[in-house]
Length: 219
Image (cartoon, rainbow, N blue to C red; front, top):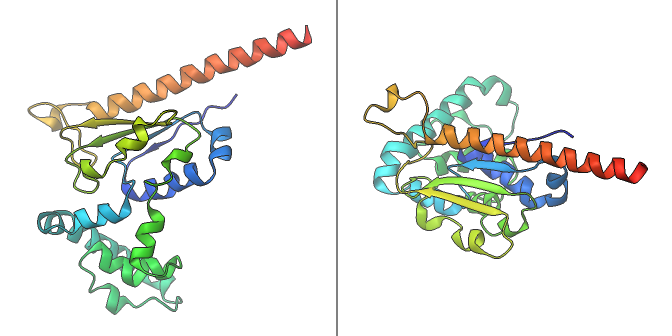
C-alpha cells in the first residue's frame, strides 16, 4: 500500500489542489489518505479584498505584485509569442489584481479577474471533500482573515474538514519564542510532522487490516 501525504504552504497551491480535492473526490480518495493545508486561502474573493485594505496593500500586496512583474520580465522571451503579453502594461501593475488583469486571466482563459477569483475559490465546495483535510489557519492572517474561514463547513455533520486556528500567526508565521530566529522548530513544523506521522501510522494499520482480510479469505 502506498501512502501519499500532501502539505501545502501558500494561497496559490491551495487554489489548485483545493479544486482537485473537491472536483475529483473519488480519485483523490484513491490516492490520498489525508491532506494538510497551511494558511489556506479558501475564498479568493475575500482574500483579494483583504489584500487591498490600505496597510495590507502597502506591506503585502505591492511587494507580491512587483515580484510577479519581475517573474514576467525574467520570462519575457518565452512569453513574447503570446498575443496577450504586453510587458509595458505588465510593468505598471502595482497590485495582484492589476497583474491578474493583464496576465493571469488571459493566460488561463478567464472572463475577468472577478471570474478568476470566483472560480478559484473552494469555500462553497468543501462539502465535497472525500479525504480528511486538516487546515492550520491564523485568525490574523492578512490574506485569509478569520472571519472568512469556513467554520460552518468544518462544524457540519460528516465534514471531512478540520480547522485548527490560532489567535496569531499571520500568513505562514506561527513563530514562537522571544527570539523566533533562534528557535529551530515552531508550531507549524511540529504540526506537520505530527500529521505525517499519524497518516503513516494509519496507512500501516490499514495495510495490516487488508492483509488479514486477504489471508482469511484465501485460507
